[in-house]
Image (cartoon, rainbow, N blue to C red; front, side, top):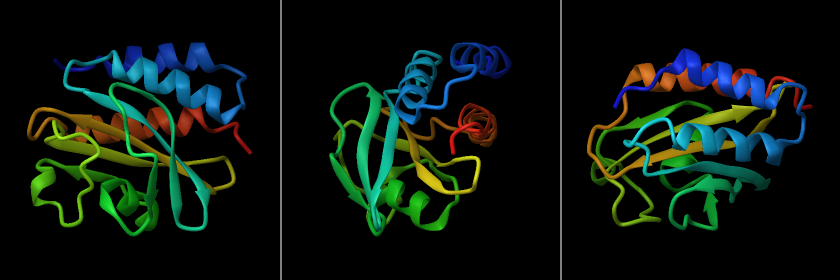
Length: 152
């Protein structure tokens, strides 16, 4: 199922207009994105909670890992490098952390506040291999940038 990203972006913008609370924004974005495609099996945030440490934030789907160091996994790589991680096959990703045994592919995007500080990462897992495209990554990066633009 392809995602109607322009409509998704408009919906999230309307729901979050004027909101600056990070957790509220994360919860709303996770919910809306999760329900946008049946490819999205787990959708949520890992928040920067200390030096080189991510902790689980608002999400949709089954359980997630509670803590992820920047040095481990796809989420850690996104936080450590500040770069989007588009992983078609998690088994081929060195150091992948299996928070859910059903995950086959993953897309993780860093999330920045208005001052360029890393707030966390947005993680989408799929139980299908090669589930994500560059279009997904680009559109979601734009949505995240807009949603968190007012966060200080």
